[in-house]
Image 1 (cartoon, rainbow, N blue to C red):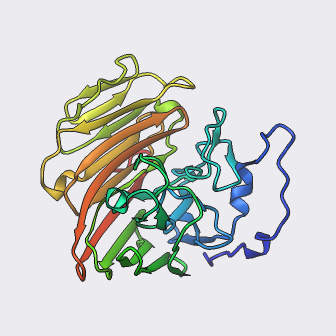
Image 2 (cartoon, rainbow, N blue to C red):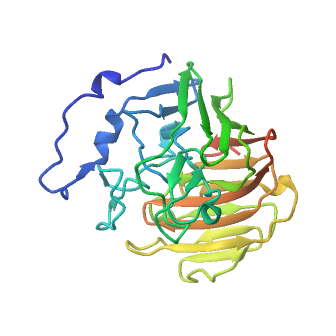
Length: 343
């Protein structure tokens, strides 16, 4: 399939429906953001380049590799899990159910890095959010997503082919000492229902980069997570007990035994994994439809968070990154898609 660039729609005037809150837009508007469609004949995905007209302008997630509608045999693994989104990327206030702030209004297999140098910066100082840029510290809570404007967004480039896309982010900030070269490649593997996401992060600054990164994996396999099972190479354990009427831990398998009601969240840090990279190997399956996804990484797991609401299931494995100036880290995720009768 030839790639389709929807840049003509970038300047289209869009008006929110009367039912939307002021400053919000329906999710259908997001599909009109400039993007390319990649496909290997089995799996297809909508890939959104970063930049001025990008779909995602928030400060939480990595701007590289934003993808929606990752589809196999008609099953959309990465549909929208919210019905409206906030237009202003500086708006971090809470909104009614179904509306997402600009920091978080994105779906699919998107990543987030932890902040770097927040405490060291001091109030008013500069700190790094890899994948986004350099920010000014204006508060005391490093878990709060940075607010705009960016002090240094670096330079980005993007290119695509029929089956893949490459994102490059170069950032050098002499005022803070942080800098990196970051390349991320998304590729749909020829002849397989498989997608790889490979990364290379090189520290080109004068300070160490010590952080973590995880993939949020907003999966839309089953509303309410009903009929989902999540299997791992190890026995699952939840740091915070999950609702027994909704979720059951059964050795190496997590089972959703009832649908998550609207307004309810199932969330816990999950444990049980060891120090081997082979523990980063999960299968999420809708046992009613037979569709599922295998998620693998090639580095050891540092942490796992599990978060799910009525519209999506999110398994969030973290890896650790510690780079001295001049050092490079590489890692790859592999996604295998399967349908009824396939594994």
